[in-house]
Structures are given as structure tokens and as C-alpha cells.
Image (cartoon, rainbow, N blue to C red; front, side, top):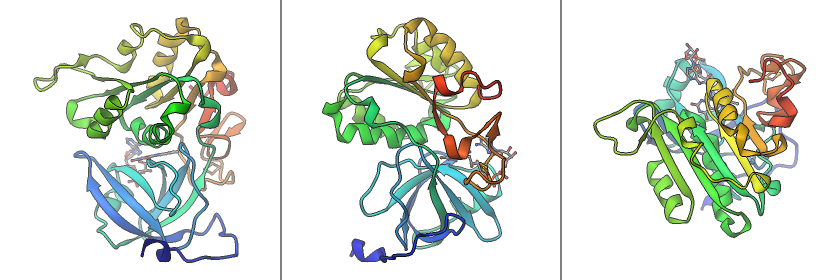
Length: 281
Ligand SMILES: Cc1cc2nc3c(=O)[nH]c(=O)nc-3n(C[C@H](O)[C@H](O)[C@H](O)COP(=O)(O)OP(=O)(O)OC[C@H]3O[C@@H](n4cnc5c(N)ncnc54)[C@H](O)[C@@H]3O)c2cc1C
Ligand code: FES
């Protein structure tokens, strides 16, 4: 039975110690990405959309990965992992029932409660859809508490679109979904151009809109430029920053931007909190 898989414990788990977890599913989502469903053997703290876990394997080290699933009362969570190096290649080889070592969840997630009753524009580039999926699924579970929902998602080629079937489903549930690829492709009938090309046609009620942006560092500057005449307050523009991380605990300094530690105060920030930091965007 699922609930018996998680043992109760009274002592707090040290954030330095990884917990043994079991891979329940390892599913191909594209040539480079696989989606893992992970069940901890010992309960971890409940996660929020936008937080990250440190996932590791003996002999390969550990790295941060954003949670891709909404909060789950059984403690199970999903990570979508792109194969780029030693650790991620080893993680991709894991089979159902194998062990992965997890610490976390860490960091500050998306301010979901403050998004209620507002229109939300989700802007994702490439693998930025991974943490966005956790947020979107959380919002969709309580759809009537939010206003208009719009997704703008840009990737380089059609093969790189992640969670395409889920995006179609979100569209059927009333989300206005726009996808784009960077360059023309024979198999693609939709919009061509970077994700910023989807912004000018949008009709936005700036005073009632929250905009969430997750993507590669280069994307932020251009998305913010395109949004500049949409009258959205810097407090209502929310971004997730990806920085090199080692400890996840505010100790090693790897993730530092000027005076802040991204692993502690982020990775999710309001634009108004970071626009004065020279190295942030
Ligand atoms: C807060 C946070 C959340 C993250 N969430 C995710 C996630 O949800 N899914 C995910 O797949 N990754 C995510 N990452 C990135 C992930 O941590 C790195 O890809 C990981 O360190 C790779 O480990 P590795 O040992 O396989 O490769 P490494 O040996 O660390 O890197 C191998 C090569 O790949 C390059 N590389 C490293 N990271 C990336 C990258 N992200 N994109 C392109 N090239 C890269 C390196 O420069 C190097 O050349 C996240 C990072 C942060 C900071
Ligand atoms: S990752 Fe070590 S201080 Fe942030």
C-alpha cells in the first residue's frame, strides 16, 4: 500500500543528509529529458512549486533540480532532468525501484496565494517549463480562484517541446496557450520566432496581471523589455533564477549574486527585489 511506503519519524532530518528515495517511474519526455517520479523512504518536508531538490548518486555527486509536480500529500514528487553531464547521464540510467539520494526541498517557491484572483501570464523558455509545470498544475487544481491564464512557451525546435499533451489539456481547460519555435521547421505550423514575439499581441490588464518568467538567463532581459509597455508592476513580475549551487543551504557561496544567496532567498524573486542587483539579470 502506498502510505506504508513512508515511515514516520520524529527527529528532524538534517538538511545536509540525503534521504534514500525510490525511483517509481523514469519516463522519456524528449531526446534529452526524462521525467522521474520519486518516492522518499522517509518523509521530506512538503514542497512548494518553484522550490528545488538536490538529487545525488554515490560516485557522481549531486545537483539541484526544480520540482516539476504540484504538492502531493503522499510525499511523492517529480523531477524532469536534462542529460548534460556525468550526474544527469547516470540519473537517466536509473530504473524503476532504483535508489536516488535526495536533500530538500530548498529555496523560496512561487507566491501562489498572492496570485489568487489575478490574471496570470506564464512565460517559459526551454527547460523553464519544468518548474512552471509544478506551478501551473497547482493553479489548475484550483482553477476558479484565478483570473485569465495565459502560457507563452518557446523552444528551439518542435522536438524540444516538453509536456505537449499536458499543454493541450490545459488549453482545453481554458488556458490560452501559445507555443513558438526559434526557427522554421517543416513539421511546424505554429508561430516561429523567440518567445518575446508572442508578447506584443497580448491584451493585458496590467494592474490585475501577474507575470511569471522562467527560462535561460539570456531570455529575461528581452522578455522584460517586451513587457515594459504592458504596465505590470515590478512587484507582480516573478522570476526564477538559475545559479550554480553546491550546498543549497546558504553556506558555500556558490549561488551568490551581489548580497543575496539564490538558494536561500530564491530561486524565485519578484523583479522589484532584484532589479537593483547588477549581476542578477
Ligand atoms: C535551482 C536550479 C534548478 C535546476 N533545475 C533543473 C531541472 O529541473 N532540470 C534539469 O535538467 N536541470 C536543472 N538544473 C540544472 C542542473 O542542476 C545541472 O544541469 C546539473 O548540474 C548537471 O549535472 P551534471 O553532472 O550532469 O553535469 P555537469 O558536469 O555539471 O555539466 C556538464 C556540462 O553541461 C553544462 N551544463 C550544466 N548545466 C547545464 C544546463 N542546465 N544546461 C545546459 N548545459 C549545462 C556544463 O557547463 C558542462 O559543460 C537546475 C539548476 C539550478 C541551479
Ligand atoms: S548553494 Fe551554497 S550558498 Fe547557495
